[in-house]
Image 1 (tube, helix red, strand yellow):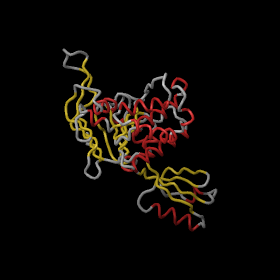
Image 2: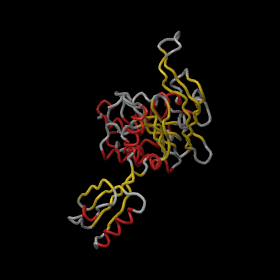
Image 3: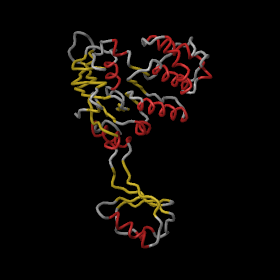
Image 4: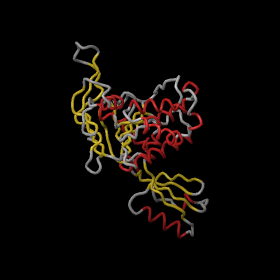
Length: 322
């Protein structure tokens, strides 16, 4: 197990130490399903933190423990230095759960007002935030419509806005772009980066790993109730050894030109990809220049976050996934 640590400026927003949770079939049975098995996690202010893992990895259980929604766990867990049972810490958290349900008989603006007041914020503060937030998620024109008239994507965008209406310091987003179109996803990414700039810590749980790769500073990958690995996006997407070279013009005899150098040559229009090591890249460049070819770009290829994720999960669950 790898301990996950991502604290900035010495201030811990989320702290979890040796966290265990077992779901038992009854109060009288000691055995049960271990949802969390010794999780350690430390997250500082201003981080965009990706919490990833397959279904049943323990991600939702971890979030519910932090929010005081699940009991019967052992170990230590704190939000802003206070235990999950302390309601004052939860007032500083905005939460967008997966498959959330908003009151269908209220309008979008009424939902924002209600949820802001439930979070303990003043009515004046909430009302001043509603307009700008609805505008950011492109919902201003639908603010007076009933929730029952909203599409899934509209409800998701409103759900994000309600999670921010009381100016939280920690925002937990569970599948925030689910059902949202590409334009809406881009808008949500912009909002997350704006929150980071303001020093807000953001927890994101998403199956869209490409989006996580675009906006997260650190990522934790969980499976079977434990943390498999954690680190920055760069650390979790190492170089593959392959290099992609863009050319102004690709000669017809490129295969012969590069013969004997590198491995797994893949020629495409406008360039090629080749696995290289040591001084082989210099040899390739020399051959291209000797031919008088114009090199537009040289890009080392990295594993995608999705490739790293799948590799880790398959390694942790040998024979269980095809």
